[in-house]
Image 1 (cartoon, rainbow, N blue to C red):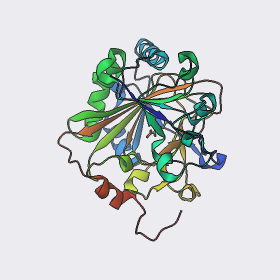
Image 2 (cartoon, rainbow, N blue to C red):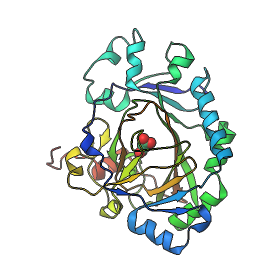
Image 3 (cartoon, rainbow, N blue to C red):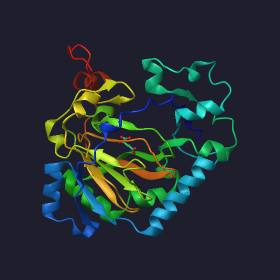
Length: 309
Ligand SMILES: O=C(O)CCC(=O)C(=O)O
């Protein structure tokens, strides 16, 4: 499988005030301790943080697999995304369009796409990988996590019925790797707005405020869909985050954050010298109904709504 290669635009810095650890996430220890009150907590708060969900053996095999993939000439995945800073290492990309300081809105959304990995040594290239997508069938150590029965049982309780994995991503924030601005995951999916979608964000190493842990607005899923704008990404307006009480979720390797696809969340720049390794998997209720870009944008987009950001 030849991956779609995306060289992202150079990311603009975000204000440090956008991510405030006002409150620390509450948690339960282990999938076995998810009882009815934990399920109620998820529905009320939009998240459930499970400590020590995965063993060191499973997480270390998964992390090693990702390291092999980012260093390989054949990563065997659908897409591979590189941080915009890789552009400084490349002499020409697609004419000169990739080196523009201020990309227009379309290139901001898409980055520069190709079917060739960047033409620099693989060890150097690897240090710029931000995200891999679509790898589960080809990579058993990652499939073992995605289909882990104790986690699936909990997710099916949260979704109130059978679910299917419909998106798999490895979120690798390298040192100084970019922010993922505040957003709701549902704003990226052409799925009926009432669909039950559970995201599983799994730490494959220590994740801290410093290296870009998850921040979210606990209970914010209950407000339903929010308007998104194309700014540093497809995201909430920064000003919507003023005066909010934010929850931070520092995690240890093997911890799992389950959250509702309407929970507003984001992660800041990795300000450390260490990679931040995580998997993000999305599970969708059986028999969900697909919609269209138009239907999604009518709900999450700002066009024609007389709003500014
Ligand atoms: O892992 C991250 O940094 C953010 C992931 C995320 O929220 C997303 O891609 O939807």
